[in-house]
Length: 93
Image 1: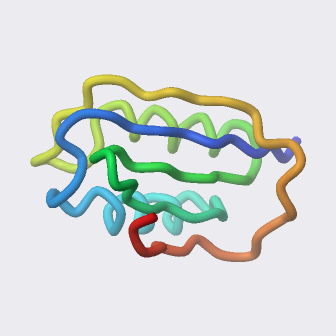
Image 2 (image 1 turned 45 degrees about the horizontal axis):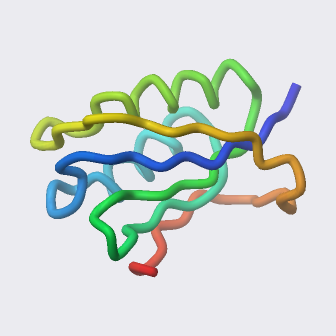
């Protein structure tokens, strides 16, 4: 079953290649969506795909790339989002 989740990742997650690493991990898993930095220092992402694959990406987000220090991850359903066909790295918002 395909699902959509919106996540926010807090901690030392900017300037450590978090967005590009998440994009690469999403491509490896076949998950679609996007990831972007927020001005408050957190990272936001929308992830879509088969539930087991989205869960695997959410587990990856709990630690992120080697230089990240994830303090917490907030996850909420995103059922009203249109289906996406790729995983993009967006600019800071």
